[in-house]
Amino acid sequence: MAAAADTTTYDENSEYVDPDWTVVLPRKSRKCQSKVSRTEKEVKEQSFAPPDLEINQERESKLMQKIESSLKKLESSKFFDLFLSQIEDPEVFNCFSRVLGSEPNMNMVVYGIGSIESFEAPRLQLCLVILMKRKFEWVGNIEVFDPVLSGTETRVLESFGCSVISVNEEGRRQALKPTLFFMPHCEALLYHNLLEVNWNVDMLRNMALFGNSFESYEHHNSVVKDYIASPYTKRILASRSFAKEFRVKTGPDDHNRAFYESSWLFFNPNDEHEVPII
Image 1: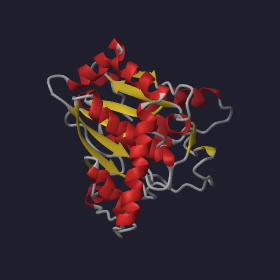
Image 2: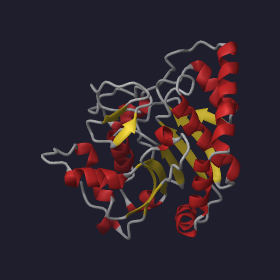
Image 3: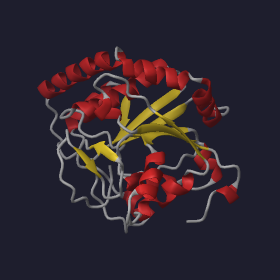
Image 4: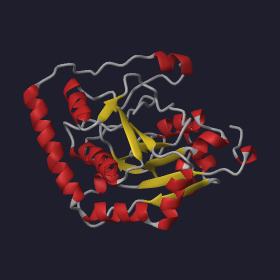
């Protein structure tokens, strides 16, 4: 995911503490390394090309097999049963209904999926997106972006009905209509950018977010001695006053790394006075 330069060292199976305290999470891949000083116009005009443009049919076939295997594994898991039950719970489902309003569906924007070819956690996260599309008719088009996606991965994503975003938006997609943002294990900067560009009543109400627990950000900020808060967490913390959060239960099976510390978040400020100036 687009982020400020990160000097933390880790591997895909390690746990770490992000410099912006993105809670203790498994790191999926290197995310977009970008300067935060660029203007929004420059960001919008920044074209993107996969780092690996080669189309390899053998790699493509193997990746398709891996994803099909992960789909079966995830769909038959206890985690997925808990996941569906939570969405269908009246309190959570009412939040989705409020975001939808009179619209028949909400499109999904997936940021920071990581390399679905190299690591299982990103594949499981992608499979959750695909299964949501299959299970719920209100899930609309799916758009995906990560700078590490190769040409082969792009073709496979498209074969599963996803479209790959051609511009690095750095998380700055405006929710002009109901939109589900799928952003597990992204850096605080990406959540900051998403909130900043949608920092008004109407667009905040148009958002459903699957991502890191904002409650954990707040808890970390309150209990860590001598902690100096990152400027990228200010909107995260400010949104807590009008956000409703539902922790995602991971269950007893082996999907904890893919969905660890994830939550559903819905934003419902009463009026502009409840959205502070930052």
